[in-house]
Image 1 (cartoon, rainbow, N blue to C red):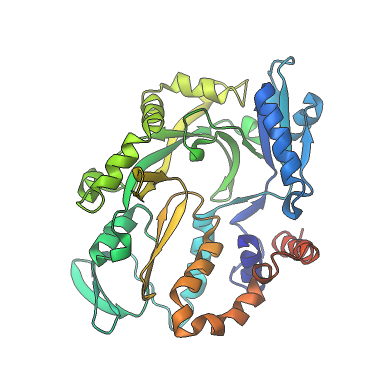
Image 2: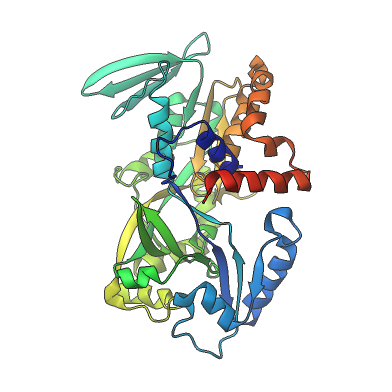
Length: 403
């Protein structure tokens, strides 16, 4: 769905240059070892292969074939180790920062669009006419504006803004921050040997977003090689936030949820403690499971950012920790907010379609927009037609990757 939307943006010349800097075609590979994991991967392959999106998926337990796919993963590996791998060749690497920058630059050219950077929201107040008064500060000067609809997509800052808005639908929600760290390769010769996203299986007790991966990434136009994630802990909700973010987020309406989530996530707490106390040598040892010849002096630790996992109330457990994204919306459709962490960026298009359904259906705009949405997201309305899906997938690939 997202790729089809980006293809439409390219056709509409949203991107100034002919080359798309934000997206690269990169094979996605799942790689496992030992009998249990190899059997699991075979069963998953057999299930996915039946779906139209995965009909071109390949599988192999032949070390020679896998070495052709991912030589860096196979170099130095024990030849007697039982391994298994699947490959999808039409995977992608997406730089969402670059994509966002391109979209905003295009919107800035429109006369009706105003962009306010470096502005801190100081208040969100519902007016009698259902509009929102947004108070903001820029360069020590206070200003305000009125909005018929407010969308809050502020990452770790979303909970704070929802608290300002005093939205009833947001009561009981909390957040638990986890920082994401990666090992970054510093040797260009090693980086050049790898061109794939290789995913393994998360360790027992580890959260879903901790699935280890050896990743080819393109950052600022430069090819990079990262391995991780390694979890860290900070009470900040944003990478450059305040250490008081977590304690100040605990209130009477969400304290039960926070305590309940903590009680029922002891394995996660144990996992985080183990991650935080790891040495550089410990991290290199886990890297060698995917890159056996890795040298300690050729990898450095970087902090990618903060993820605030959603905590929400639950009748049975008091509170549950969610690892995906969650949309909260006002009953009258005047406000929506996106909570949670990955995979928010990759599913942003489907999330926005969900918001249109929930927030604009009552004022008739859904019908007005339906035809327009069909022009750039035909798959949204033909989700069951396999022949049509294949045709649209081919068209999308040709637009995004013409060469």
